[in-house]
Length: 318
Image 1 (cartoon, rainbow, N blue to C red):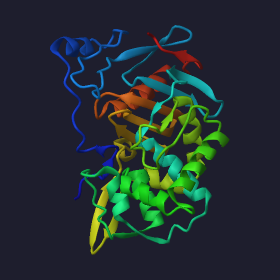
Image 2: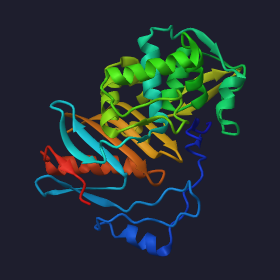
Image 3: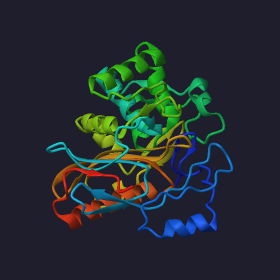
């Protein structure tokens, strides 16, 4: 089986490991009950500081879950109540979460999903040296490219979707920013269709709106939550897998999701899932560690299930 396709500045499976923390910092991280954030030394300007497990307290003073993501927003869509919030109104790079908006505007334009599109040198040039199994000259349908972009975060597929939009990349970016404005995403801006650009920014509040809008589209729901898909690239079948391991867990009922990763954004995860029969939207941004974002999602779910009816407003425990 082939490995997962590329995401962010590099593939999620081949991304450079974050710089290890010192022994002192690691010891601080292991004491999960502390509310202070532990900052690791930064030998390089681009390196991400490690965040300790920080307990979020609810508005009524009850114990919230321990979360490592630096920005968090958890909302019950049924009544718009905020269950957990940290830095929810702060805009930051969103990496491949961008691809939800790329897909949304392509589908809004009603471009035929069965139209065949050839991968070009322009598509491959967006992140030279990054791994991808979409070779120049490969022909896939628009639907297949969208499937790979949403499920496996294939950057070259997302670029091809923008390049073949009516009016090209400039036109789709105008459409993406207009859609963001229409959805009330006040702190959002897009400068590319893949998420590789640090200029693609949004706040957790904005991304909640995007997730809800995306969840209303059946194509995005299916493509983003499929566990795997095999497509023909030239003469050979190539298997792609979902970058979110939770879609393969039977205990999770996820209607839409998207992961993201770049050095600037850190590890990100957005999704809508049914938890305790409630439609819950989760936004987890700038997680440190490859599996921390999914671990945070699991911690939020366990906290909700154990709490029964959590407080409707929550804030950072810092």
